[in-house]
Image (cartoon, rainbow, N blue to C red; front, top):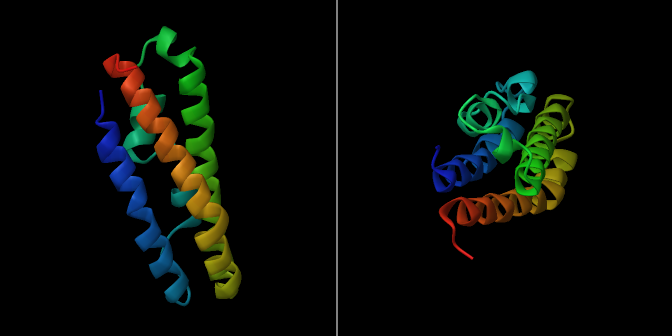
Length: 120
C-alpha cells in the first residue's frame, strides 16, 4: 500500500506548484495534467489494482475518492484562472476553497489510514 502520509505531503506541495502557476504568465502547468486525479502517485494507487473490492466498497474509500477528484478539479480551476489572466481570482480560489478542500482530503486520508491500520 502507498504511504498515505507521503501522499498527503505530496498533495500539500501542490500549493507551491499552484502558487508558482499563478505567478507565471502564462502558467507552464498543463491544466489537463493537474485535473487528472488518476495520474498522481496516490491517484494511481487509488484507481489501481492493489485495492480489494472490499476496500473499494467502503464508505471511506468513496469519500477519499470523491474528495481527491474534487481536489484535482479545484487545482485545475486555479491554473485555468491564472492562464486566463485572472491571478486575483486564482489566489482567492487557492487560499479559500482549495485550502479547505485540501484539509478535508488530508483528514479523510488520515482516517482511512487509521482504519487500515486498525486504529480506533
